[in-house]
Length: 189
Picture (cartoon, rainbow, N blue to C red):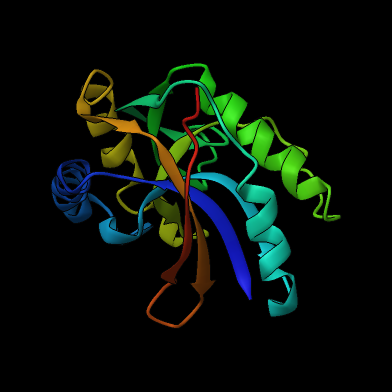
């Protein structure tokens, strides 16, 4: 089973992001947009795991905690790795420091099971779409970049998180489908 750990978004944030995608979709055919209902703040992509390890994964995640909830503001837009050679179109996450601490605790907890640590620095974001490879990429991407310049200060909402979730991801031709397997309240004083 393909697994990941994430924090859910509020319906209001999902609606604001859907509105943004509706605005931007007509500008270019270069972006394969994600479904707003599937967006989440990923703490850890685990990957393929045998179902037999599910109980041990849950037990490790139950140990993760912080003293306060995580405050998250969803704002700004950008490209990974950069605007000149974009592969991913994203919306940024500004959060209290305990979001990165929470992600680090999830990494540490799962490393005890032999699940490899992420080599890249934790950069919280929401993927809006993936850029299709050339030559299709060139069509309309300039318009998207121009519109992005007007969106740099746009805000899409705020949430207070006190739990995260273990999800199963099933890939299909229609896109990924997510199933929540377990929830973990993480605020403990």
